[in-house]
Length: 238
Length: 238
DNA sequence: CATCGTTCGCGAACACTGTATGCGAAAGAT
DNA sequence: ATCTTTCGCATACAGTGTTCGCGAACGATG
Image 1 (cartoon, protein in one colour):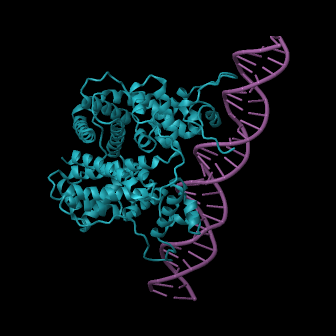
Image 2 (cartoon, rainbow over the protein chains, first blue to last red; image 1 turned 60 degrees about the horizontal axis):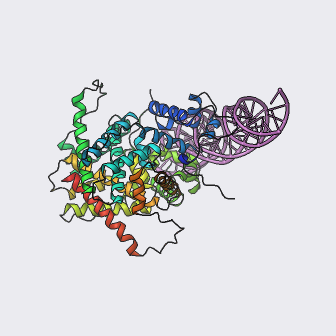
Image 3 (cartoon, rainbow over the protein chains, first blue to last red; image 1 turned 135 degrees about the horizontal axis):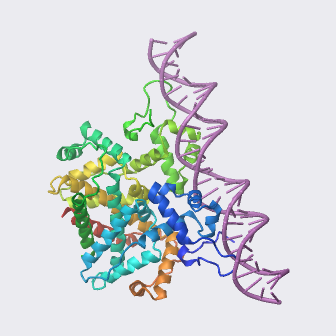
């Protein structure tokens, strides 16, 4: 017998009907993993550390999850549970923009999410609910079903990319990267890139003290996001 | 002294001017890593395996590269070297579409690229050349420099996502995922998703024998790609 | 109440991973 | 021929995901 391909985790029953009952649940493990990722990043989510957070051994987790990737899928879907799916308004664009705005908020709450969405898109029960909701918002739209799904996928991908870019502002790696771009600009062989710096001089990123998240600072980015996404969506859905 | 933050790899000299000269080069190591990734995927690119492919020890690589991530950046930039940057035609959209088409071709040649582009976008010397080229194609365009850079980033991200979707067709994980969607559709609680399957019934993916890559099969996807990207680009650049 | 069938928890082990250290050897410069 | 600097790399360390196997725990059955 070859290596048996297990079905996706959502199709496997959580509890066996017989024998000793499990002491924990997928939800419990997922919550621990999410909390760990929120606090220390995705790389901190190792089987051993998640298990330790639950006060158990690493091997125990494999009673609930076939592989670490399964755990990541559970995390993604647990994030999808955070959507608040209000009934469609009838104006598809604003409905989609609302979903996208929520996606952005969720991804900002969980900085590890964009990377997951973009590298291993997976729809669990809650993700499926979101898709259903989007399709309902597009019910009256004349585009083909394939296009609508494409729009959904693109919306998620673009949002993830946008948030990743947003969060990179505080990142050290991004600064080093920008330093190289500046080096290239001053070297003379790339005039268009040099012009880029001339247009908007590099503001030295001094260790910024967070401004207690007053509204006005955010709203500019909010608008940029909404504008970008509505352009992308009207682009794809005509 | 705290842990010193090294600058990006492109700013560090490859060879020290004095002392015993190195036996290998970054290019050589990068080539070995790329070949390995092409053949066995990104996960196969471990320091030990790359070193073994070069007939050397793992620790030796650290004379050329400060960390594995540096090696990944080198790989990304070596892929960027595969662009053929023809002088701009004057029609910015077709110029950008040409770049995007090349990006897609490159990513299909190197299936590990989309994941890298999307999770750790980095511009090395060749990547910078591509950016310069795109900015030149957009020289006469009235959009702000920031928008142009945004368009470049979005172009790469969307292309990566598109190729990842294309390549997933052959993937086993994607099939299991589709199976779950079908399960949800038949469960009854998601009529819009069910309608999706009604519209385009699931063609059972029998182990397809590759049709020697005759043209007509491809051109349909080619058109879809061009259409999607031109919509996205005109969306962002007006 | 005892037995049975099944599942659970998990210590230990395996095969890896990225990276740090330290030292002998090599090579160009003096 | 010496000196200086770098190179190659064996070894070691602290982790990683995952498998195995076994004792214990439990619900159902007799």
